[in-house]
Image 1 (cartoon, helix red, strand yellow):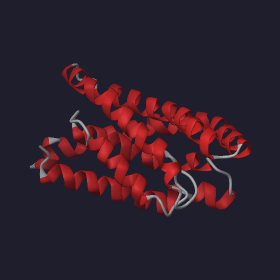
Image 2 (cartoon, rainbow, N blue to C red; image 1 turned 135 degrees about the vertical axis):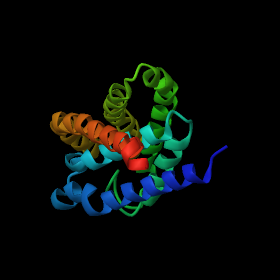
Image 3 (spheres, one colour; image 1 turned 90 degrees about the vertical axis):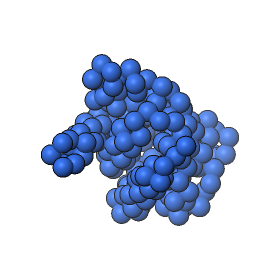
Image 4 (cartoon, rainbow, N blue to C red; image 1 turned 60 degrees about the vertical axis):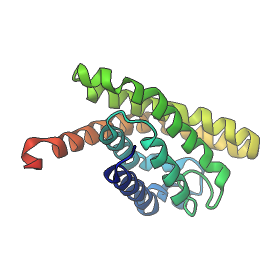
Amino acid sequence: MWSSRDVAVIIVLAVVSFLYSVFIGQLGNLFTGVLGFNYFFFWGHAILIAFGLLVYEGRRWRFLAQGIIVALLTLPTYQSGLPFDIIARIPMVVNSFLIDILFNTGWRYFKKKNQLLLWIIITNIVWILFIPFLFVLNMSIFYSAIALTTWLNVYFMLFPLTFIEMVVGAYIGYNLFSRINSEEFTT
């Protein structure tokens, strides 16, 4: 059973992710007009992904719910495709489902070993590795070959930067989570 705190955290993180998408995340596409250039500004999402997964503490379906809400809220933005393109948001939801299933299973193990930072870094890296496969599957069915190759070229051109953003975002999200859970902050 979900508590009202769980629902509030899911909604707040989804809204913060939406606001980041509106004001910063979609700037790459808006300034260049090139699909996939939004990965230049992915660091904020990396922090929110890491923080959300840590706050949910391995409990199922919360990250998926957050992903669905973010996908719906970002419909009018260029964050994961063209505005109001529902099909372009499918990879975001599928990736949230896969990460929720795969990594919330291992949360207890990493918590017991006191390795949550390693867990969240691995999770963020796998997030950014799953996305191109899901987008390629989606774009090969619903988009032109030119749009697909343009997106792939931009993605792989920005991959080193995005990889660093995901690792640094995981570290910042972990530190934010640790700070909020510390005794000094809660007392």
